[in-house]
Amino acid sequence: MTESVQQRRRFPRIRKESPVHVRKLGADFREECAKTTTLSLGGCMFVAREPVGADTFVDLLISVRPQQVIEARGKVVYEQAQVSGFYEVGVEFTSISEPDRRALMGLFEDHIPDLSRS
Image (cartoon, rainbow, N blue to C red):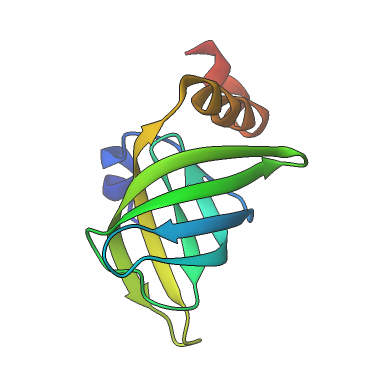
């Protein structure tokens, strides 16, 4: 990724493979288990077996640590088909509780020590 894209990002990202339960909201409701590849305080990217659909709202349950799951609602901001047949799905969080946001922040403090000083 180019430096200019990194500079435009509002939140730092970490590479983290975590189980995520995805519940697609709306008329074509469905659920799927997937795996995140990156996490940020503003969203995540996960790999799905089927397309979710850009601009779709989803509820996510993300396992951030053993025995710790956070819940967030988000909007799919991009989706890219992969050669493997899977889909990379980028989600921007639209709603996350304060306790879950703090739990996510703790994960970042573990990976990015300088973040706790800001």
